Length: 627
Image 1 (cartoon, rainbow, N blue to C red):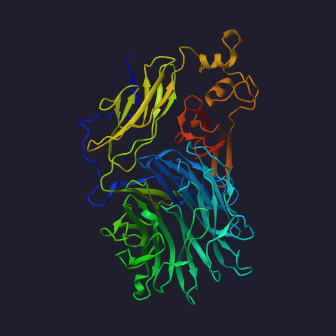
Image 2 (image 1 turned 135 degrees about the vertical axis):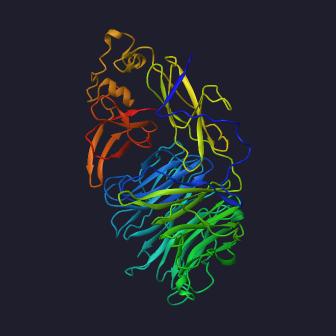
Image 3 (image 1 turned 60 degrees about the vertical axis):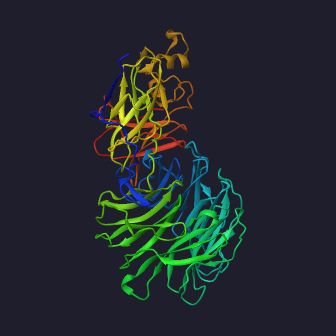
């Protein structure tokens, strides 16, 4: 059989064998891997306040945006594959659309799922909501209310996974402990990985006068967790300090309040990361009161499992102006701290960082993380995969129309092997043709992708291509084909193969666009009793052809894919109902004669999906099921 493979563009070939050396951009303990890259296509409005969680096989990025729910600020997320590239489409996290949903947080679950938290509700009465996602990519829960005290507003939610698989949320709460005085305290609550409460609310801080606010939390190696926060006027009038407290996994405290900073300067924005053996490392911003033009700096301190602190160190070496809002992550035997620095890169805010060993000693000088320096690069976050790789994500100003979009940069401790892509998406085109697509690898110098069909294995791919969508034709009808994909860098290094994905070509006879085997499965083997593809057999408003394309039951009026066009304050949306676990593709046509894909395939994590469309030229839209 002569299998033919075509693409949207040209095919490239690779010369030479894969090199044995591992590719990195520079030498050292932690180095850049590739360059800065976009985590999403350009999106309207602003994508800001990212939150990031990683594991060995990828993770999730969440952010606050202005278009996901059509009603103001909402929470979007996207899965990252093992190469830290985005896979499939971004998806909406919040169920509630009314008002603004802001300030997301995320942590990875042990089984590969994730937990998202954010603030929801009116500006002066915001509450903490969460949603749990399973390892299969499907929602385990709807919106889960985290706090039980609802008489006042909440601030700054954070979430961490513990060694036993449970998660703990912390947040700031107004007026909960101080009656009529408008002050904050820090509270927490534990949940199971399936989204069930494991405790009531518990108060984190012991000292209650004035504000205790802006908490962060980390699960520790010994099964405990640590919470850090800002406390005002606890030591003396006008003092603003950082405190920490240790807890058992069940939420019982095992320490009192631990003072983190050692001098009297004003402090802000604490963050914490675990250290091997149950210790932890805290970073924060601190005001320089001696050299006033230096303003804010980044400081850090390591603590052992008993809460005993080591030396306090200033981490930024560039001290002029403001260095603020640090974030920290552990991966392997290294810590990476990142922060925002004002005018250091020559154009407003930039993202800088520094690598530390697990004792807190700096390894080398500062790192300039962002490559794009025009205007603002803000809200950096960092996460590690546990094996020596880091990812830094931030919001980058891209223009007046698009506002802020998300950018990313990979770093790794020493040389790291390439990671595989997620399985490709294989969809059926006809009796003898399949379409195979996969996410592009962003930010690395990819020379080509290699597609392997059935039993093909390296170094003999079925196809070498520069594209990520191919059509495989001249196939046998009613036959299942399996595909894997790899990518090859410009130095010849090849990634491992992805996990396989399969699909089956239609039978030899296609009846009005519907495969005969589908007709036989629903309407029996007697062709004379078959309805026409354009008939609506179950009276649900969808023809049999449309039921086939949607993957719904043509004999059940309750099983129907309903596509609606919605106008909202933030634009025009195509919305449809889904079956969890299926993959859908939105398509557009100017005259119902040819259809083109709109955006990337969308994995249905729940029962509704929507896509914002431009609303420019007149168009028809349809949704098809591709897996």
